[in-house]
View (spheres, helix red, strand yellow):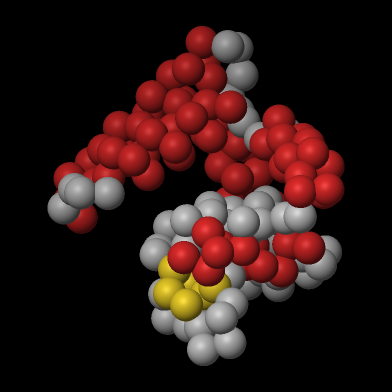
Length: 134
């Protein structure tokens, strides 16, 4: 639980009495996402960990094309919508960089910034978007 969070093995921990409720809450969030984008992201994270930047960029371009083909086969273009959901709207976001322990014992992302998932217990505040409005 807490020790695993300190070590960076998990994004966050919850008390056992809240585990079912928090698990269902996270599952509902994931069910709202495009399954092809989630699948592609999961595979991409695993596949690109040991690749050079150039090889990873090529892999990600191919993975994006694969998702577009799968969506087209289903009769709609959910690729852009799935990417928007996953990147622009999500409150839960996998952290791609390793964690390092902060002086106060709280887990942070590399670079010392507090983890986004640590703020999950509080309602995540909306981020300001820079650029064009939709």
